[in-house]
Image (cartoon, rainbow, N blue to C red; front, side, top):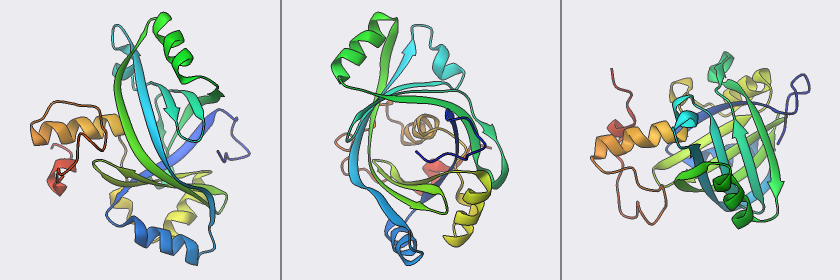
Length: 206
């Protein structure tokens, strides 16, 4: 993961946007000379919390992710900065055994609270990583890097700042479920097969 050289290696600065047409963004990236860093891959994620729900209540993340490798990640609450981006502490490292890592977390008192899937394609441009995410509830882009580089990349991609998503995927997904009147199931492609998510489902309550 690319980091600003002025940050510690455990700091993540990113902006997240919801977009309708990832293909248009992909073509624009290639026209700008972006490099394909990681081809499209299916990610499977497991989120954990303690028995009191303290992590979710304080916007902290404890997660196992499996794609081309297995990653254990901890994130602290983010702080909004310029260009709609947020910066937060992120500690992430690879582990060799998903089942063993899951067992360890549960023996330490954490429990799986939900699972989610997405397809992710990763490009690099302007010292940033541009992550094209296909999720069961729609398409998103994350841009990670230094704040100034993020702003430059947003401008080059002609992405509307109004599309910036300041919430976590978990919070956004809960709002979608509430709008649809369905329980908060695991966010998998099978669970959402055939569902149409209207634009109004993403609107923030007034």
